[in-house]
Length: 491
Image 1 (cartoon, rainbow, N blue to C red):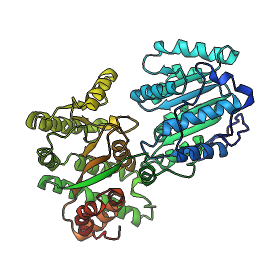
Image 2 (cartoon, rainbow, N blue to C red):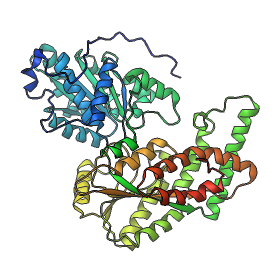
Image 3 (tube, rainbow, N blue to C red):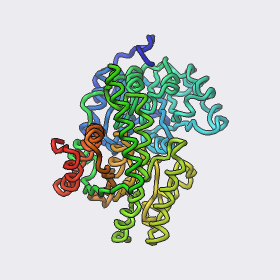
Image 4 (cartoon, rainbow, N blue to C red):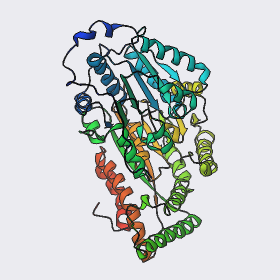
């Protein structure tokens, strides 16, 4: 358990308020190839400027909690440009969870005059280049170094052996930084690097308060102001949307299994109360996690979702730029059921309805992913059927419609999936989201109270999202049946 932040002796830099104009020291050198430079065409939005100012005011530390699609990458690179002007920043190290994000960061870096080393997969392709450029920067024969790597590469011996050679004036950027709160990753973060920036729409880790705290101990706390989904839509950073909840009943067999799991959850809670153990948030209790996960998987793979999908898409065969989210295949024990749903959805859409669709999973090679993205954007493919790999950071702004068959109880996944669909794109005036929500079965009085407590948080997210939609009244009426069933009309 992470108890206290470890003591770190770090270099300190005197940072001034940003956007004060050019620094005399490197007015010419910041025009060199490979050195950070703001694109001439780029004008930061007001909230992005505020984020930059907050980070500098916090002495080069902090977490930017900004809505998915609101421009966290650009904000981070703007910070790097300002640091270069103020203190002659020497290096940027970007750490992100997935390979496809490395290539996305590379595209953005090039717009800022940077020439990044992409350090992932086979170390023979990047290790020699990295060690050479590190030597060149430290010896003064190279002005700047940019490295983009993955979480899994970061923890490897090959990359860890190089960390001690990064120059004093290095900025580390943790993208989708909530992942870096996991113990092994957090321990691998460079302690000698003092300039630290975390990016995430949802930095708080699900089921893991200790991991969340260790993340903030390393990068710094969430900086104000936070930039919410409401802010992003009102300021034009994300598009408006229509929200259509689709309520789905469990089958008889699923209802029986659901009831058994809910009763076991209730007994576990009762035991903790009798033993005077802290109940706290359900998600914080280790003995409840497996039961909650089992129940989430049952809901995610509910059979009637396929019938609801068939009925929905039978009337929308000409719809293009549609994303279908299936249940999360991240955990080993879930692979079979997740792929079953993925294949069933692809079969209904492609086989039965003649919808031009392809699957998109973590096993899809990078080049094929890029080809699918281009086919999707052009309309050659009407839809992509995806699991978790499209949740974090993937930039396909052409998505106009999303059909969400499965969401875990994890608020991060909820926020990521909906925000992903709202990215602006030429000709995209508004997005449409169909959200399949399982109606729990009728429960006895004792189990009902447990269910009400479990549902309250999740329903609050659905209601909040409905309230921000252009069709808020209609969306709220759909959710009313669920609120009435569990006497949650106060939400």
